[in-house]
Length: 53
Image 1 (cartoon, rainbow, N blue to C red):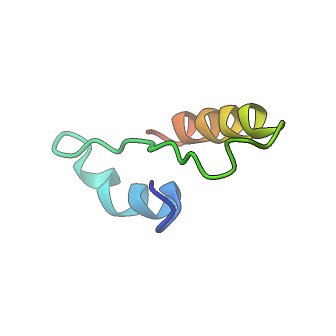
Image 2 (image 1 turned 180 degrees about the vertical axis):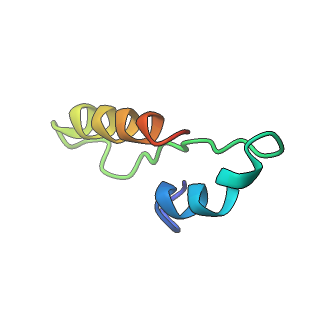
């Protein structure tokens, strides 16, 4: 999940093969100097995990 398609798109492809594939969340450091960066990325990570990453 490196900014190309959203994790939901990956999971649609690999859901039927969960015993063969693992979907990872890759943290982007773009905007790291933004004061809200940590909150945004924590929310993204929580969503990715809730979707199966």
